[in-house]
Structure formats: C-alpha cells, structure tokens
Image (cartoon, rainbow, N blue to C red; front, side, top):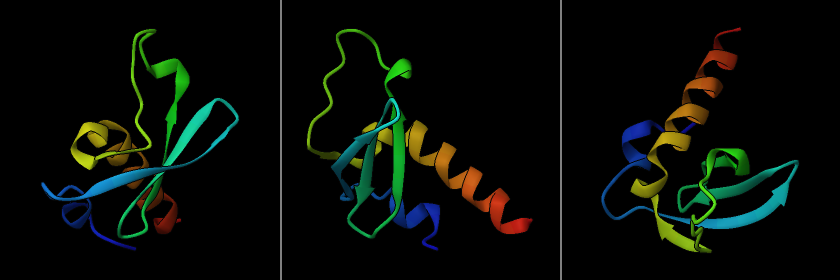
Length: 73
C-alpha cells in the first residue's frame, strides 16, 4: 500500500473511475482508490474527471485510515 504522504503531494492528481452505490470512485496516479459519497457533497458541488488530490483530502484520508484498520485485523 502507498503511504499518505505520497498520495497528498502538491502535484498528485486524481481521476474519476466510476459511480457505484451512491459514491463517485476516484483513483490517484499512484493507484490509491477512494469513494466520494454523493450525500457528503453540496448541491452545487462540481466534481471534475481530473483534479488535484488536495481537493479530495478529506475522503482520501478517510479511506486510507479505514484501509489501515482493516490491515491490522
């Protein structure tokens, strides 16, 4: 698994992969995949197909921490 620092670099980009079960799934250029639940977005949110990873920091950290917890079990 990649570490969080390598995911949240200033130059890291994310790309939209697919929509499933109420979430937009994105992946970083180094292969880390994470969901962005639609219910957490505002009604006027804009989600681009390609964007800076920093804009998705909340969801990246959340998924990263959940995956680390699963590794411990």
